Image (cartoon, rainbow, N blue to C red; front, side):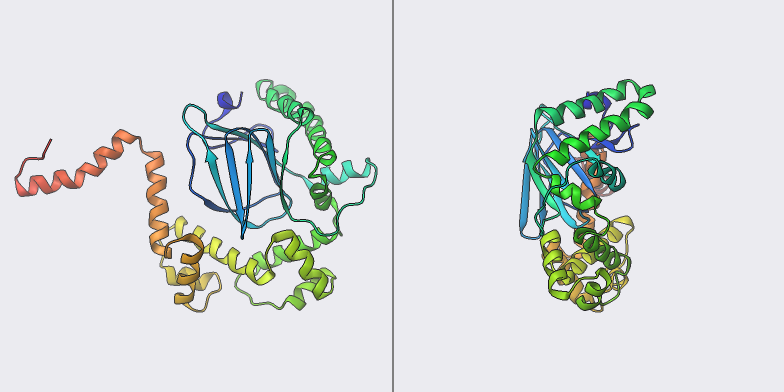
Length: 313
C-alpha cells in the first residue's frame, strides 16, 4: 500500500499526521532538524546521528524524537529491488496530554534523552495498518483517522518509549522547559547568551538545567547553538548561491575563517564546496541517467567542434 500511494521520497497524505517514506538506494548522511515525530520502518534501515551517538533502526523497529535538535539522518539499507519503506507519524502534544489524563499515572526517569529506538509489536503495526488503509477510503478520514491516531498514541504510551511521549505532554515539565530554551536559542540565533540566563528562563538552577539539557539533547547549550548555526548556514547556502562570509555573519559568526573551519569539521568540506556538491547531487537525482551522460558530453562536443576534430566513439 505504501508503494502504491508514494510519490517520491517523502509523501504527505490526506491524513495530516502521517507521511509515507520511500527510498530506492542508500543515502549519504543528510543534515536536518528532528521534529516531534516517530518513524516506523517496514523494509530497509535508517540511521540517525546526534553528536557522538548513532541510532540504527530497521524493519520492525521505530525511531522516536521528542525534542527538536540538529541531527544527520541516512537511509542505510535500500535498493531498487527492495526499497526502504516507512511511515512518518507527527505528534500533537495536546492529543498526547488528553490521552495521558485518562491513563494511570506512572513514574518516569527524571533524565531522559529526546531520541530513542525500540522494536515494534503486532498491536502497534495493526494500528498503523488501519491508518494506511484509510488512504483508500478518503471519505472516512475525517471521522476515522482521529480515532486510529488515538489508538497509535495509546500503543506508543504503553510501549518502551512511552516516557518520551509523556514528556511532550507535560507543559510545565523539565523536558518542556528545555524545549523552551531550545526555541529561544533558535529564535535568537545570532545572540550570545549565558547559561545562567537560560536556566532562569526555565525556572531551574544552573546545575539542574545543565543536566536536563545534556540528557535531552546530548549537547551543552553552547554546543547546541553552534550546531544549529552551522545547520542553518548550510540551509542558506543551499537555498541560493551566496557568499560564505555573508552567511557566516548572518548566523552569528564574527570570524569567517572560524566559520569555515567549524563548517568543514562538521560537514566534511568547506562551505562553498559542500554546497556545490549537494547541488550537483540534487541535480543528478532529478535528471535521468541517460540524460546525465548527454549533459556530461556537451562540453566535449563543443570542444571538438571548435577544434574541428572528430569525437572518439
